[in-house]
Length: 428
Image 1 (cartoon, helix red, strand yellow):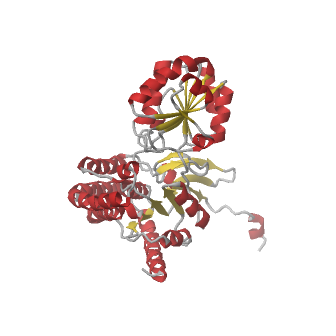
Image 2 (cartoon, rainbow, N blue to C red):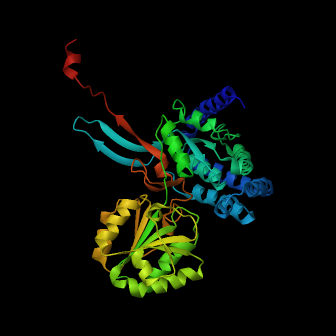
């Protein structure tokens, strides 16, 4: 496509989405839930077509030499398609945030001021190789009353088109407004630039993907961007830790699904327990096929592990690799995390409640855990339903983003003829 054609096509989608957003804002909670359930059924009814399209993406990805982690993110099977549909049903059953009263006050002059949760409007989602994002983003935006324009990566273009088509065909008979969910059907890089400059129609952009994509969107965008940079997650094993529990948590957080952003990347071990704890941890991780990279103090205890470089402390592996460091104190662990963390998720493993409280109050990350796996940093685990992403920003959303984070608020003021300057009116 020519540059002019790309620009014209996306701006047309923006205008349609703006009209759809006005229609969505008028739908009742019950109506939106009915539409979502119909969309879920659309996914089930079209599962064969979705899997056929996904097979094309997998074949192309293998030919391009995509990594195993990327192919795993891309791959769909019947169980995954039905899980995506189940996620849509789950969102349909969630409480509708739109119209929720946040505050209500009555001023001395009798004016009533109510603060209500309202949709943001039109949201652009730019994502890479996960086709499930097409559904997750669309349904969360719909439930929260927002129109959405989706731009997926080339790796999943066939899967994305099939999922979007299934959602549309399922939702339209139930009353899905035209243009409420739109997928850009081409993957020219210029489409990202056009979306980023389309502040007339887009109220917010959420990029989901690698750091390069996010930085590109941030540098171009003329509207707010919610960012999710690297998931460099840490575990600190305190000197008062239950060591068996610590091994189980680190194992789960690192190996249960290493290719995701809430997987563990670095473990910090208090010096008082390092000699006893590290051999037991290494034995467990070796059984899982995890490569350990340690600092000098770790290698004094585990001489066979690879030496960690400075870059390791700021690397999101998304693989069966972990960096480990011995620290002198809780303060040293906190300092290391605040220096190298991507402000995603961290965990302290300890029986010392005071240490846990200090850890959680001293680290500037979105999610801070005590004695449980960082893998719980997830919208579904938090009870939000399918998440739109995990924000490492501080405004307006932070951590797992569910329905409420896809809303803004509005003040509605009701009076009975109150005037700012009544005397001025009487003097006319």
